[in-house]
Length: 457
Image 1: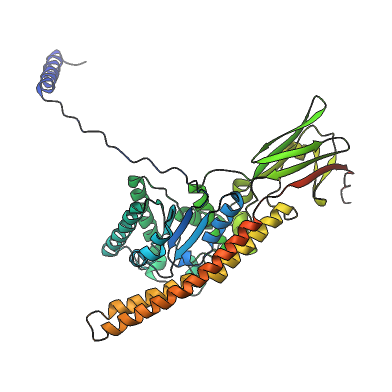
Image 2 (image 1 turned 180 degrees about the vertical axis):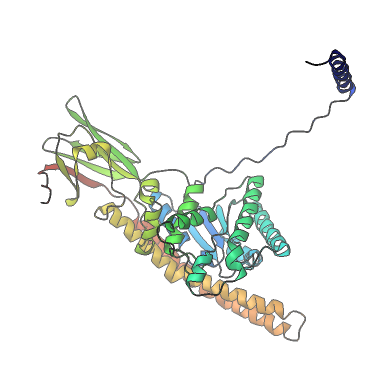
């Protein structure tokens, strides 16, 4: 029980405090205002997307798989892609070639993948980090001046275990460097949010996928040299980029059903015509897109990411079928057999290599692989050579060799521009072939009842 004396004292003290607050002027802090996060990109006909980066971009792999996605998902739009990656680049190197390699293409969208080299492959160093921050901030400012949709991306994963599996002696970077890259990515995420930019997390998916696979195989890696992801890892990167910035969409979804004795259909991102029932169900289907198909070397990544179901769904549903098994043919080619229950639930065709749609998309992927390997990888090599010449010129400043080094740089630059022009013309010719071959075609679907296959004894 509270003593009456203390009760009176507490009451008096409370009144005094209230009186003080009543007399004091009220001050309020203005509410902070924050930039809205950029919406997902919607590339239109004629738009250009530039991939700015270091050697991981220079590999022309994740960029190629992203291109494959857009070529097959939006075949009615002529979208252009330019790879602007150079091996060994840091933010300052990207700035050195910015006007020629980025701004000149008048991009609608620019992704940025830098940081792996910026951290210098050592434990955290504040001076090195400050240099990275300054360079990245300048890049973001210059892209804002271009009015380009800017999408920073975290540095990728440094796989220390892979380095040790290769027999390399344990180095400080093997212990710390993946964490350093995580810090660089965290800073970049905050900068993107402050500016209201798009953002892609490359670091998380690569690390998480590696962790999951090592639950069953401790020697598993998709980054054999610890730095450069192979095709499977690059496909994980492609799904991260598309998943974080692209519009959600599907290849097609078709449902055929019976109502009041009549066969009807509904379709999403596709058109059904000439539907008939009876002994067989037949119709013509023209989808607005093709399935997302990538070269064989990236299929491991495709499966790891369940990319078909998640990002390339091509679904056929047929309801009200009599009990039994049914065979689907497309343009007369047998595609597969399913039960009425499976068809009623819906079957996915995006990974079925027998369909004409898959085969058409595979041809598109092959053409784009050719476009990258025969043109763009070589273009990136030319810019790598230009960086080497520039570095020699910069080192010669203030020495007797300065004039000679400058002349050598200018000569290389002029000759390189002529070579790049020829390579880009080849890339454009292959892009023309891609757009000739990525246009969806109408296909004849037929579903016929077949005898059930007896189980093997």
